[in-house]
Length: 260
Image 1 (spheres, one colour):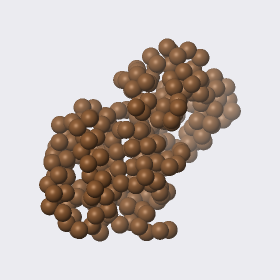
Image 2 (cartoon, one colour):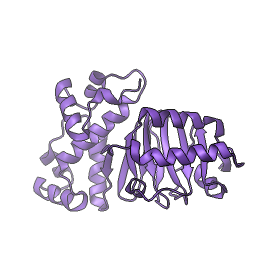
Image 3 (cartoon, one colour):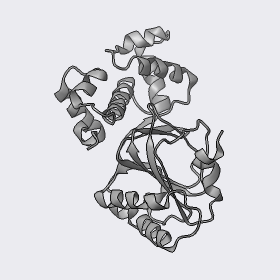
Image 4 (spheres, one colour):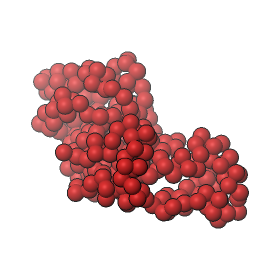
């Protein structure tokens, strides 16, 4: 493994209050890790998944994530390359914004500030202008943040549920009938629903719908995709039904996630 290519192996050794790392072809590692520094991620191109012990978060193109210090996580991407612009902070504020992992829209002013930090990418020496600028950027994060996007899937803890979810996610684009799926695992539909609710706090149909919408959000970040094409790929015959379901789940319309 090339040590310099994986930020989680090196970033905590940087003796600065804030550190910029932009990478046009981010190399993902399957290793679980945590940073002593908090991490702001902006996806310039592609999509990224952030995995924690009990959640999977999707970070689409032109959106941001905040990863608080000390949170154990790993990352992945369905398609490469992924262009990430990251800024690490050894000191984050006391505002509730900094306490939890969150996915959120990037305001125009925040995006411009992140792009401006390109000049300091992987600079290990102290630069007073960089220090002042990044302190200001950290300070505006709670004020530009409006709400988290619910682009998150619960992770099953029960091995039986993991097996069922593997099947559901492999066939999500088909019309899945819950009694038939349950029968594949020698269960009644009622028992399968009970197990899902106990482990994930969500119904089987609710999980399938959420997975489809998050998969759609991922696909919408791909160059050249459109709402109709993505609706069909995730199993919707009607674009209006897809758009309305998308809005009910995420609070935004699918076209809002198409990069411009």
